[in-house]
Length: 453
Picture (cartoon, rainbow, N blue to C red):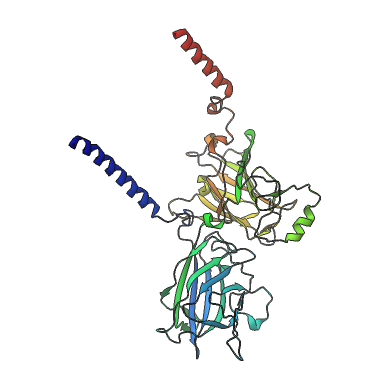
């Protein structure tokens, strides 16, 4: 009997350990919000109470984009939250609630918003000055920190009623949501922090907020979209092969123009379809391709000199619904520590790990190519990069000249598989996988076995 129990107990123990291991793995949250090229990047919402009122307070809310290369493009951000009690918004500057809600219980002065869970958006440029506040009214567009730190914030002011009138009675809002402009951001709980200090315009006086709390929001590409939004194709001067984006990188073609569908660029009704949807529509309307991506980045190894080598980068927009303003490209390649010159793009070195300088951020020159136009003849931007060779590491062999990863507007692009990269003409590893070689080897093995039998 003991002989039977022992194996059963052993099997039960192994099953228990396996079950615990599965539960332990399932307890982890998604790590997609962690970006290895911008490990500390986030959006911080700072809520500063600057004065108390008879039934509440006046606060300035500022959205800071501390992400190195992920910006908020048109149609801009929208910020939501849920009030802890029965607060209302009496008035706003630099922003507006999208829905007033039911304010029927108020007589005389009607609040700006009575909703339990309001959603606030930025005002558009050109709004009258008496409705503005500092860092407002840019249509919700916020630059990335590395690209333009001076415009990496957006603010609005609101007067809150039916709320606490002191640090002890005020209650923090909860369930913050940030769309920029679509999903992708997850916001933590509001946390009381040290009050913000403000410098006067003449820099001779410092004032302090009466109370401050922060909300930190992090981005996940997995939450933002079900499929990737860009892909990479490769070519080189030493090989006639052009490696396209992997098939169905961002989806596969369907026979309609709904979500997941596409439009033939030669279709006679194309102009009417595009004009009816308008520009900057969050729903992509892409040109029919094998990859079905709104954006394709092409990396071409162009020339080889004695001490330098040259690359041409082309970004093509296949999306008829979007003009990409303030676009940027992040490229990881070991030779960026010896970048000599770049043409028609701006450049910023990104060093998430200070000891390694292999990541670069590229973006357009203002008023020249800082807007990537919608799909069509003008829907591309391009530049060339000149690298100095480090003879201890430089090689064209085994795909070394191609990037390790590429991001467009903060989203990771689909790369071709490494074994599809253009190889040097004398690369024997390609020849070994030839079908003829495999057939010869197969029949040789059969002949050997037949002779042995």
